[in-house]
Length: 221
Length: 392
Ligand SMILES: Nc1ncnc2c1ncn2[C@@H]1O[C@H](COP(=O)(O)OP(=O)(O)O)[C@@H](O)[C@H]1O
Ligand SMILES: [Mg+2]
Image (cartoon, rainbow over all chains, first blue to last red; front, side):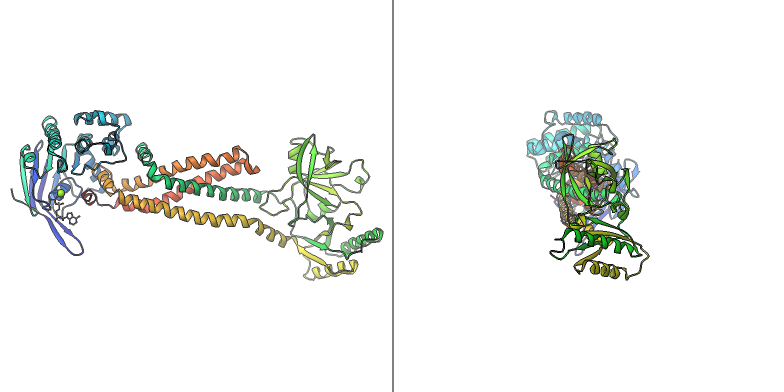
């Protein structure tokens, strides 16, 4: 599903040059649930962003869902992300001025769809994360666990093949974290969604199929 | 997407209330500016109704006591007319009241017909007036010596007054009460724009100056041959002073008076334009600043939208559209207030002027807003999604 070959990422600013990723080779199979661990600043988010085509590697090549990512225009990249990838972030990134239902519908606004279709799909996604009774709330009226479940609903509403989750339980206590983790595991099992998850938590990582460890931008395991 | 933006703006209406208020105020000022411009322009396009390019206005002030003997004074006035008309360059001469074309003087009178009252401009002029100014008769004729002993004194009215009292009818022969005195209409003249190009002409009546009128009518209009040489003014002055035995004579060209009258009527518009201009700059900077601030505050949201499928141009389009939606909120409120002017017929202006001004103000605000949103929108499009999602 995801093929990374010799990925290297260097951040250059006026004064410093940071080697964020170095010679990463990684294959993620279709239907796999992969977790990535490593100390803070070792390049996990960078790797996930590159997989999600939000960021370009300095060198190396990426193939995702059988299409080569280089040479895609900005519009094509946007379209590709919209169709293929769902993102989940540690800090949820919900839009506070939109109600839960509108937040979940967001990805569908960037593809052809009717208001009715959007509502149906969003309700379906909210059902899956157990938040059907919170559709009219604003994000600020929700707990952290609920927010992350809304974010998951938003990630799955467009039925993407791949979900990229960057420390999805990082801001949650263990009970809420486990709820979120259960949803991801079920999603992977029931729908066959390929999931790549960055985590700090060994317990969470243990629930996935495979674990990759990064250290200082390099793959150590 | 549009519905989505409406929802977004609606949910943020409190945050935006100040900008919306600012937009409403600038819309109202624009509305005032455009109303004035449209009004002036409509007036400007109306026919002048008379010739001024070959006409001089002469003001005389007779020495005190010189009119004590009415008969001899009338004699002097007749001599003056004969002498002036004898000048080869002079084509016509008319004694008129001081509210002559492009003068600051006005005189009003209440006109009555069938219990309907109209406040109308009141001119006193002699029989030569239409010939000197080349006015256009629309109905009937100008008064002349045959009207001197009519049962009701003659009066000529302008088209504006006719539309007031006799729309679609023939006005000639009808009786008007000027004050309490009945007058018979002999003709209808095309309305003269005698307060300048930009000022709407009001209803007006022309009363016949009798033979003794030159004694108290201190202004004289003279039409002359345009091919005349520069010495004409001097010869005219000499003719006047030698007959009247006074040198307090002022000769002015109507062409010049028109220019200065026009400048005076443009002053309020220029003032309003300056005030409006400053306000618009202020609002433009305000909108620009708010957008700039909001784009920077919403970096994470923009990053997220990029992640879920928005392209860079989609983001800048969103910023521009959001601003258009925001201004639509403001314009709906603004138009609601502006539309009261034609509905309640405030300031007695044609409703077409108000409607045109509303349309122009709406367009102006929209264009202004798009211009202001363009750069912040482009800036938003360039936000790097990975970076924006990273920072918190
Ligand atoms: N936009 C950026 N500009 C410069 N350096 C960056 C940028 N993003 C990340 N880095 C650096 O790259 C390294 C990896 O960062 P990141 O992928 O966020 O680590 P992690 O997610 O594992 O904590 C860090 O040293 C970080 O400081
Ligand atoms: Mg990280």
